[in-house]
Each structure stands twice: as C-alpha cells, then as structure tokens.
Length: 165
Image (cartoon, rainbow, N blue to C red; front, side, top):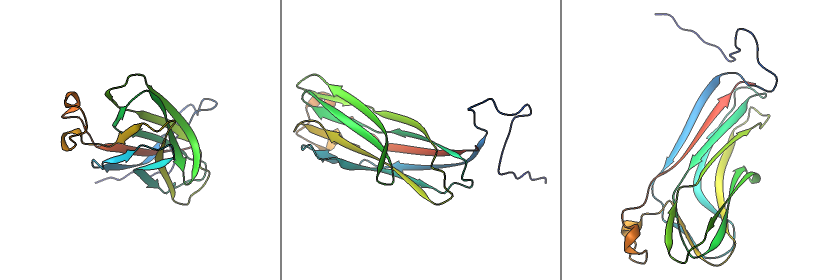
C-alpha cells in the first residue's frame, strides 16, 4: 500500500497573489445543548470553542462556527470570535420584535495566527440592553419560552481548518 505525506500543497502553476494552498488539518468541536442564558449587558462565553496546533507558522486558520440563539425583545447582539482573549472578528444581529424569535448565527473567518503553538478560538456574546438571549438552547425544556418555539434547539459547531500559507 502506498502512502503520500506532505506538509504543504502548492498548485502546479503556483499560488495566485494573496491565495493560500491546501488543507493541512481539520479539527472540530460539537457542543451539546448547553442552556446558556444572559439577560444582562456583560460579555459572556457561549461555551463554543475549539483548539488547533498549526503545523506551520505561515498557515492560516479558517474558522467556521454555527449556533442557535433564541431572543426576546428588540435589541442588538454582538457576537465575537476570539483568539485566546482577543476579539478578531465581530458579527452583529438585531431582533426587532417583542416576542421570542430563533436565529442561527454563523461566523466564518480566515485568521493568520503566525504560530505553531496551540491556538484556542471561542465565541462570546454581548447583549446591548437587558433583554433575554439564550444560546445553544433547548426550547422544549423551558416553559418560559412561548409555544411557537417548542422544538427549537440544536448543537453548536466549530470547525477549524489549517490552510497552508
């Protein structure tokens, strides 16, 4: 049986300016429904995180994160992608009604951590007012969420892909 090993993939004609090569490794974290809830304005951790150890310092990391959010009232939510404790990308949603609604935020970002040490990415959220936000939430287990949302709830997922530089 043959085996091919490489730590860098470059197209036959080279890379176009600003482009990256192939995928070196993929890491994922699937988080179960965690019932994370916030009614204040402090930034809080959704519990969605994943760690990767790049094999090359010139690699880029493609981060893809998906989660469920149930929110009540009219307000903005700022979601942050963090490398360690540093915000590296922001995504903002707005809920414009007074009733409960479900959102499925998704964040995709190409990062250049410039290291071969372990890097942890995580998602945090901040509500801009004192309204209720519930993430990675199981509406079937909560009698305070209106009946129209019964059955909503899903796992949160983060996938990290190391792309050769």
